Length: 377
Image (cartoon, rainbow, N blue to C red; front, side, top):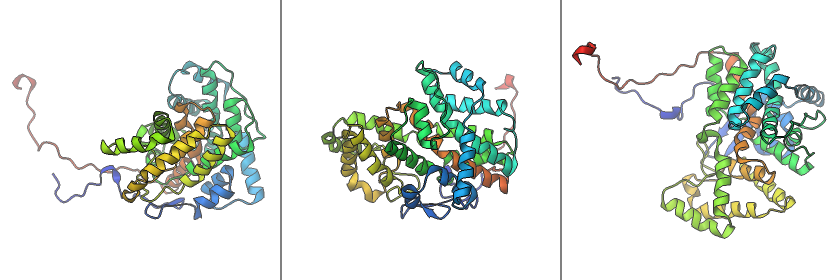
């Protein structure tokens, strides 16, 4: 009914707010957290330090990091009722169980309704520590095992692997999980972060926003790429089959999973840091063939890179999880573990200068018409 209105479907290329958190240059293939390149952070930092950076805007001093790390470790606790909730829905998809449990925590824990920067920070730190606990506890409970208590001497990444498998991971395995979390920690106004901001814009609490984010991340168009890559790798089977697989996919105009990204035209800058880690972990685990299949697919896809079909971070993440023996339905929950600080800081920014997020839709239905009584239709 309104002529001349431009519709940006999917809100593509629409700026709705300013943000000082992450900068994405899709054409150049660049990602910055608070001005620091993802390459420097992945190579030299830790997930705990990156969390602090994202939340507070600056890299911490040794004392600041120690204090922040202590707060994260102290938060590795769950109410007893949570384990009963997990057990009651243990046969559900891990993302459904995680979402349900975070929602329950809003009712179970004092302070969950606190708002403002102080309230969001307190609840955000607690949830950052609790989310991996929930995912690990659910996987063990559904397999008839007792949950493994958190080890407050381990790093965030190492403790996650410990709670999941009941074994202290190697230094290399823990470091690769740490890098994976760093690479997934924040990525601008992606679907789940935007959804969380919409929730905060209504003056809801942080738990409500994280439940919204988890619900959005669960959709396969957002969080499911790593799982789909692993399915593809199993389908290909051997490196020598990769070229024919890609050729058949392209001939049928089907996407090759793990290539292309909504915002990147060049290679996803996060991908390179998982590539070498996959190679080394594959050798450590005695399964180098997974890396070889991935690289064969990359080689087969090179002719299409000029069309923006370059490898993304999820292309390698799934194989990391596979090498750890992690079930495929946990891949998206692992994404959530890494993304917690990003969701928190997006919510903090929204809360700081809040305004209700309420876009418009352009009506294209019938013109105004008269109501007809049911007996006359």
